[in-house]
Image (cartoon, rainbow, N blue to C red):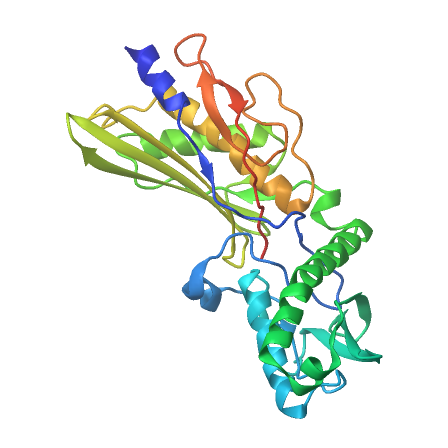
Length: 346
């Protein structure tokens, strides 16, 4: 009976919410200012308002040197800012303020076409990189045709995001203090919401499993790079069953979510009301692999190749979906099912 129960828990289907763009935009930059990062997961409007410190902002001023009708300058800045926001990049259509990065848009006339240029400038006004957009008809561009400007923004935004990611990676490789060159520090507060000794056991086990994977696990939030919060919710099901959901949320100190690993399973009602024991071991083992993958993808590293019993996959961003138990209480070896992981930043 215990074997079957643990096996069911090992076969949870953890879900990693989309949390990154194809390449992570990690962390600490030089004193000239942080680069605005696509959020690794959308924390919602409330979380953004409460984020401390404020997320670095990308300002998009009206492009007065882009050969647009003056009445269309502001419209195009608004369109670019909105499109970048949809890509999880903190962006506002405004003149840059202290600490803001800037997207400078210019254009060049070539015959009956106009070719736009988009440059990313750091808070000191230094150009960090630029991309060239696709050519547009001169008449549509200069008149500020909504169709033409919409197509231009649709073409440019993915290139701008890729450029920002490249800038971030380059700066991180050059920064000896970036997470690419040191061990990540993870604060793991106590798990909440579990009945019986579940909070205690899950906390103990997730801290131990994460520490085995390399990060420095902290009991206090001081100077942590990531925060991993575990919450348990139990709801009744028909036929004497309960649904157990364990959610592990990975956030940055600002409150921006980097990723989330969810474990969901049905168990006999009341079976976890007192002691979790080996169930906590199995649940933490499986969750730790997904959490580690979120962190590694955020940093910009591929997770390590899988080894027996460590719950890690081959770096394709998925979380172990199945587990095998050789005996009651032994950690499962993870089989990885395909699935993209989009890591997160703040």
